[in-house]
Length: 270
Image (cartoon, rainbow, N blue to C red):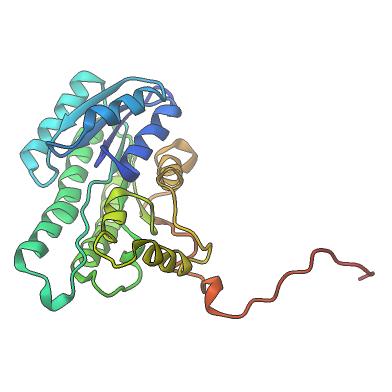
């Protein structure tokens, strides 16, 4: 990523902050975008510690005008944007029949419309240069169903569809568009879902047990997948999604069936 300019949304914490740090470590100048009121200065200090130039922009991705202004400002301050991690999103856990219109629309406005607005602006600034890479953050729940997440999964599944169509449209402009589907990850948003549990530690342990690798991901692990997709190492990859979920969506978890203990060594001849 040396010499490139990257913009990351939802960059004040969690996967967005980890992605910004990883991009800076790999040589990029990074713009951090997050909602007004988020602690962008603390995030910027962490990213500056990884090297490179950093700018911060307070903007709500659900506001299309604010998104356009943010892109224009970053290009003025850092130069042409080469890479975008389109990451901002929210999660609300709610049974289907209890999900209010307001909650559903808030999820759609932030996760889906916000992702679209950022994607559209990224295409606008990248098309004249006929190059660029975009990674949208979807979710493992775009691929599997889970009770309590009907509205959330609707937005994340739509992001995968949008990724494929955008990749098809922008390929002739030299712009790659992919998605990353994180599994359970230790972000403030994810951990907040357990605040009301009678025993949060037990709930987290149960969640980890549903993953084939028997643990919850660190944000930095998801960030590595993002940096790969934004880098030239992924130069022939577009229109797809990279699932970083510890095997949860594709493997039977280790605790769900009897597993023989592998031998420590093998003797004899074949």
